[in-house]
Image (cartoon, each protein chain N blue to C red):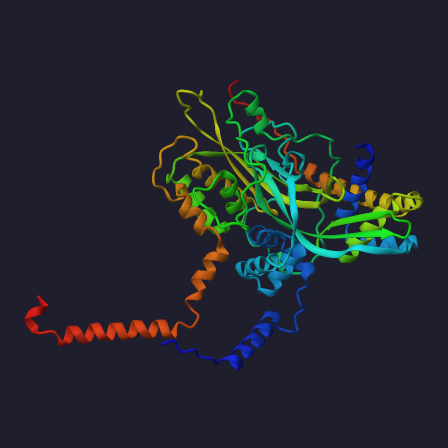
Length: 147
Length: 361
């Protein structure tokens, strides 16, 4: 479970990353791993579910566009990419990174790609949270005129 | 006898060519980019995703451009595209309690933990045209403050704790899907919510308003309205665990409505629910009101014969693509149909004029 949670974290980060950012960071690593495609990048849909009243019966809210890809490196490591949107290169890069993260290149990939993506995402989230916080209402009670 | 007619290819080609030119508009004015629509028409993008029932802001923006801003036409394009996609699976139900909220307000609890966060709202604007927007100006900048690491639990939880709130019933593990099987009535709550989530905003707004005006009495308070980003997770069979596929912007509305209780249940509030893709709060509120009105049967309320209580009426007419498809087909050639009507009317008229005078009484 603990092992999976780390892998889940980087797969989620790669799925959410803006495709351009990932592409730039990935190219900058200079890594061109030999691989075969177990599943060529494929665009499809995932039905997103919600719950009635946020806690009750599950229902189908609507679909989202997802692109998936699976690769196998020369040494047999298998990587999966599932990313939001129609980015085929995005999905393949995510799959390659997933595979590389399971071996010797993990540190290089983490430092070159995952860490900068995580920092950029944290900065984007902070910025939005900061703007939301600025719109938080401070209530004050007016002086009542009884005395 | 059926006679097939052909023709019009050249006219159709010319019409589509002109459509393309009109879509582009005056070539001396810069062309609108898809990125501009996505960034600057984001509420239209939200509506197209919600009613197109497919979350992809880039595609929705493209559809709006192609449709010349006709949102129902854009929704039609998205629905058509959706049918070409293989279905990879279904997500885990989204955790809206963990939403990173841009906006979160409650009309019932002033001092809600997490606070009243207005977000980028039109509320409290004066609805005066801003002529400054007609001129090019500097990009405005929003105020920012340090955000507290504060949880924003659902307001309903507080009412729930006192037992004042109706508990939501569990449903099937695999909810019915109207995109896979034809809708069957009576529909359960899950099927109704799916239909409403993709239903036409204007239609649901009108129905919701009718409930407020007394057609199916259920006075609603907005217990909570929240808008923000929610993670979507799906179990991947090859991996054997669930991963995040991305994030979607959602609008959620929970209403509290009065309920008098029954012999077996003490008085408690009841609830309506709206959940919609994008920043779409009018639609989410309307959805919650209509959801609540449709629940009259399970809550043991009276059928007042109000339109918003009529499941068949609401669910079979809230889809704007079905509606527009049937509505607009009547403008397409019906020459043969009409020919037969014409002949019938002529025959009836001939019978009337040929009838003897006395028989007319």
